[in-house]
Amino acid sequence: MEELPLIRVRNINKSFGEHRVLKDVSFEVFKGELFVIVGYSGSGKSTLLRILAGLEATDSGTIYFGEEDVSNLPPQKRKIGMVFQDYAVWPHMTVRKNIEFVLQDNQIGTKDKDGYVKELLGKVGLLEKIDSTPSQLSGGQLQRVALARALAVQPNILLMDEPLSNLDRQVKKTLQLKILGITRSMKITTLFVTHDQEEAQLLADRIAVMNSGAIEQIGDQRAFYDNPVSNTVAGFMDEIISFEGTVLNSKLKKYTVTINKREVNISQINDASLSSGDRCKISARITDLKIDGNGWINGTVISDKFYSGNNHLIISLENGHSINLVVDDGIMMDYGSPVKLSTNEGKAFLFRM
Image (cartoon, rainbow, N blue to C red; front, side, top):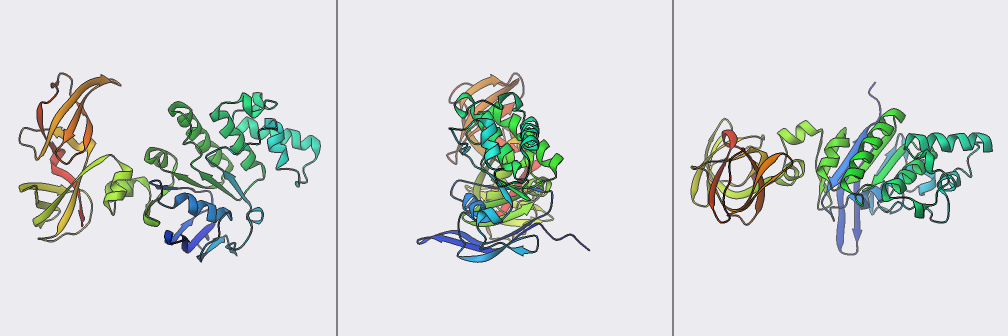
């Protein structure tokens, strides 16, 4: 018999006044899974997480944790741990006291409690700061305290709301790997919200992309990369540029489209089916672009740079966007130089408009 999902969300709707924030949101998360919800600011992902935590009420819909309907349960009865973006560490307590505080109603004895707190701080790499106050800690260390405190109550489910967005790049990468290691070793079911697509792809077993209050696609990284269902999803999984056009003809995923009155042959990456006459969005990955004197994308060089071991051209495109293109050694172009681009093997995504 197939295992029941640990989290089942069914047709959640939420509005604030006239603004509908969540629109019939449904998904499932399985035991031990690290499930990431990714979306732009304002997509509804943080509101969804607060509803799962019991900090916001739904307008309609149900939430099951295991076989229990928790839709109307208060947060303290949901057996969850929560890590927020702003740390929410109590400033007047030491690291030790911050964690001990959530254990007050726990039956762990004083001696065992001390060992338990030290064990948790060891897991997050903060044992040497056990008697420090929050004012003595960096942002990354504060978030480790928040993580240890969330784990202290031995939650069935860990909810994390943009926990790393306030940290610098190197600290963020270190904590991403720490979170991945801890959740794996403890086999804890985790629902992680972020706007960072790289973070989502690094951490997730599965990803849900939210846009304008609805989930557009759920799947693993390979499915998103090979077959995004929309331009929004494609843009979350990789940096893309997009153009509008019209389908002239097609055969076996080989399309001829018109873009700005130019006929372009496209080898379609995704599986969307389009017919002659359809208006479409043509989207190419930046990593698939190449300089091509016969290319169909017109641009103007803004600058050339060398960094991170590669040559880069900064190019302003005819559609108003600018891109950073990695080019071969020896390719240098002056400011204002015209340039034409195409995609490797004519590859691009096509989506019906």
